[in-house]
Image (cartoon, rainbow, N blue to C red; front, side, top):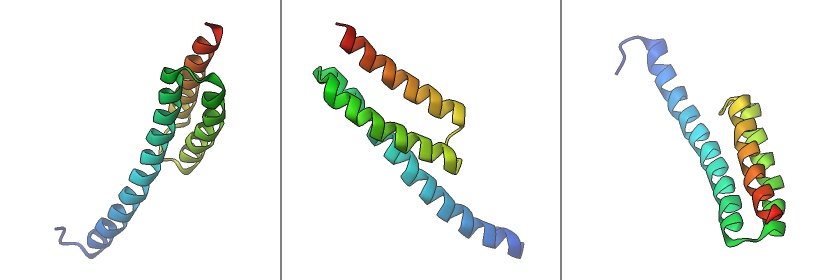
Length: 89
């Protein structure tokens, strides 16, 4: 534990921020996994619908600063790439 009063307070706020960020990151991973699972199952139409939801979740995480905007763009691009690959078959 820190000895300085402000450091003690920042430990509390850091813990709450970490919990919130963890929740947002978990939502991003879940949305990404759902899209990847539907692509693996070969359901392109369902994957497209899930992609729009996943894109929204990813964009919100980037807006909150939980993930970097370039990381968000990369995640969305890779998901779209998977869907396009299954559609072209």
